[in-house]
Length: 476
Image (cartoon, rainbow, N blue to C red):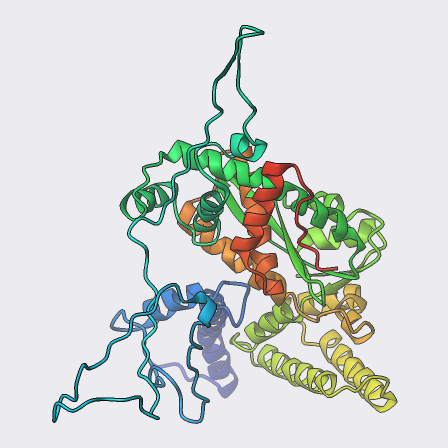
């Protein structure tokens, strides 16, 4: 006879059968959330992390079904509608080496005599290489016999000729420009000199020339290094530098303002001791940087003021909006709104405006209240802890006009170095590091100041060869 179950027994049997299923579903849901978070982490790009923009192309290519990056609408090449036309100005008369005139002997239609016209001439200016662009000079110290002393005498050659040797200062500056500013290898420069200039030079000779130029740039480099601790604001950043299988670090120290410059230093360490070595413990300005641990250690061990980078922070907040957890996403979106309001008020500020200062203070307080009270999630609490410990270090730019809220200028100055590293594959020793530090400093500083790099290299070489005062990379 079949047993009859009571309603309570049925509910207990169902609950007993469903319990392992509920547990399994909960485990699957947790695994799904974990995988979604992992996917969000793997999908990080330059807008949600500190990855370089060059990696965005690879990620978009990998995520495309066809293996190709999807392209949106692109504007057409060339000048855009509404933009003013830009034309190259003609060479001034003093730059014209030779003029050729073309004219008719008689009228091409009727054969009559021709006279001057009120219409302007048709002019085509053409720049061209001379057939032999290298001038070879021979400096001779003549041997002269003295019948009275019974000796042969030779006058000393000019010191700049002796120190320059085979290659003159302008050609040496060109080698430095090609190597330092154009990312050319020694082999490429040797091929260029052989094919274009008809001047065979070995790669060993080119290495000696860059070493000579490195010595010529040394006074200007050391002058910037001595001036660095006296600056009101210094932005700092670091990137990897390979050398014979070792990973060194290229440090960039950038100062904006009316007398901007960038100083590069290659060091085996990525620690706070490098910052202390370059700035000193008595640095009285503001250090702009990202949230890397070396800067926080330098902050703990000194009384320096620091401005942490908001661009890095915004990317971290944007990453929160890509996570699968709804509470975390809402938290990130609220933070982005607070940041947007803060910088809208900052960009509209007026010097000495009390109303703007009060508005900035309200925006600051609203942001801090939001960032410190988020959901109990790992990523959220890590961000909240950052502002519980270092809130003041994010708002130095509100108090000091010379302080920049982001570290973008240092990263832009360093981009040239990253490109050079990818092409040249780093250095092989101390002499190569010294050359890189000095030429990168000259390239970045001349670019910031709107100066001619080639002319500065030439001036530095002339001072080096003639033992005269070297040029400076400081404007003031």
